[in-house]
Length: 267
Image 1 (cartoon, helix red, strand yellow):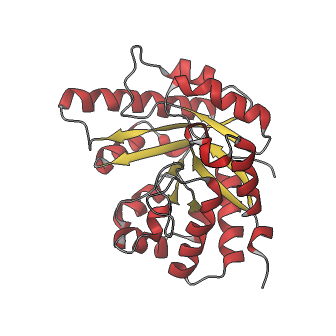
Image 2 (tube, helix red, strand yellow):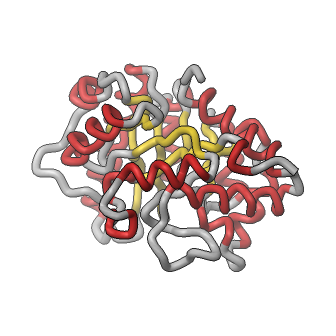
């Protein structure tokens, strides 16, 4: 049996800049070292709001295996909205490989006005992605229908991207796949009661599957309830091996190759 640590993985979605470093002796080096020990060779550190960018730029400057994105989460409140042109300018940073995370989240959105503003913001992100040729990182919660409709309306299928931390049905997954998107699964795939995610995990084509931690959130079993970090993406991979009935090396090779292809990165 091969040593899993020698088989490369990618954490396709994490928020390294928000990890509590106290458990890592206040050292990002330790976070990265633990991930490397688990076989993680690349990290996509995802932006939530413009205020994240200085920290993301610093991470990318210090660690050549960290890429970043530029975007505004649908639930983030901004005093001044960013339009597509502004997003394109921010995304010109050499470490930026994606636009997002963006999308629609109606879970905590109570008014139709707020939902409409999310849709306007999402449209600007899609336009920026198409114009800059940088794939989208999509967050959707209780808004799948509007999310897919807006992607189609704004021709987001021209650039595609990732449906991150996917928790929707297989029917929604199929429609996302038809729009040129990859499906990324998180630690939720390790939860026993996540039957809908398990169905998707079994059915997603091998060339359209990604894995992620979404750290510091959603730690996989057996670390559920604790802080998540990129080294634990290995447990997502192991869960998918069981669900898909494939060996670890095959799953790791597939998801790693998919990441580099999706984001147009040369290894």
